[in-house]
Image 1 (cartoon, rainbow, N blue to C red):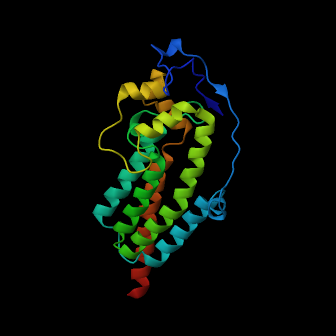
Image 2 (cartoon, rainbow, N blue to C red; image 1 turned 30 degrees about the vertical axis):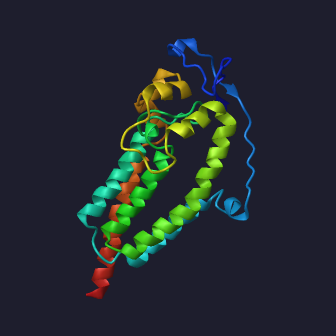
Length: 229
């Protein structure tokens, strides 16, 4: 894990480099997980995989109608957000601040939530939409808190500044001030989308998930209607 090796400071902000060649390489810091409640401990580990299986089971029960276009569009929007964010995420290097990370600290999780909402909307089951919202809020609240603790230990002061600039989950319509974000991460390359990074982070899996979700509920709806007839 790495963080910015900040020069001597006179305020809570690290000095911004004039150009990427004028800042020092990050140094390694150690992260130690410390769950502070039984619920926070439970939602760590493989909980997201379990949630995916629960969601798949609920879809199998509730997908009685062929997916409607508005829900498909919402699900596709969530997949696109995940794809976009993957081109800025340099894991364990420096805080990601480019693209959607300038408006929301957790765009990948937001994209996942939007995809789930879109799928529930597509099959026109609003009970499922409510269930997904409640489950996501409970589980991902603690997942995000744990990751924030981790990132704070890794990046230190720059991440604390970033948290003040950008909201945790629900994005602002406009990005944070560019100069302020340069104070958090002075590497200009990290503010630009990278197709190579998208490939490394398997960004196209977002669209694979989209087609899997919409294709899956279409097949389930066909089975329900076939046997109903």
